[in-house]
Amino acid sequence: MKVMERNELVKTAVAAGITKAHSMKSVVLEQMLSEMSITKETGKRGRPVDANSVRQQRLAELEIKRQNGDLKRGRPVDEDSERQARLKQQAINKELGIGQGRPVNLDSARQKRLAEIEARRIANGGVIKRGRPAKLGDEIAG
Image (cartoon, rainbow, N blue to C red; front, side):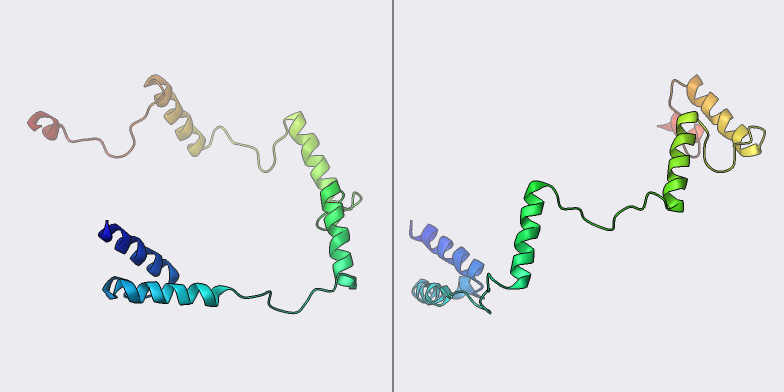
């Protein structure tokens, strides 16, 4: 039982920031921890808050707006800007199936290679082995 109390005491001391707590006597550790608990009790620090100040009133108004869901963050959107017009046009194009950027050339070497890979994937049941194929000699010896 005494060992468990000692272990708990050492753990508490280490958590409190006492270095080399494992090599100190239990009596000394108890004394140090009791002194630390006395000195830890401190009052509120810093400059006092004036509830009637302009800043505190503004913060209180913001908190009320936040609770009501009326607080809008960031810069408001200008619906007549060029960017908003471009975003609207992009949304319309997306609905119509018109993509962005350069159209795909199905006769290019890359698109032919991608189509071939996809055909092999479908033929193998959705799985393609990647990388270099294994040597045949290793399979026979293994």
